[in-house]
Image (cartoon, rainbow, N blue to C red; front, side):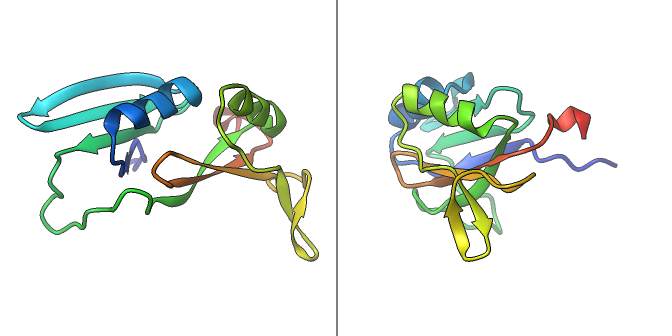
Length: 143
């Protein structure tokens, strides 16, 4: 049996602002924007080429036995791209504040690209949820 990660809930305070950030600024596809029950709205977006989507939720009670995340507490999940410089340029051109590209070196985090699997950048959404972007050597389907 395959276990696939297909949806990541992202805690946000304002669905429309978050939808604009991820959809317009980041360029993710809006797959769903629906009130699934009275007072419960879900906006689901998918990054280009990804099999995993982000779910922005409003009014959704936590499932029994789980905890609710506060907006801004989701940190360090990673997107992978095959050209980190092009991805950074694209985000910057869309108005997203993105860190410099860095890698782990002999003294810790150092500026610039590193070797294979060792180039990263970061960005945050309007609520402070923080994302890492890592450069992968090939598309997932080729690994």
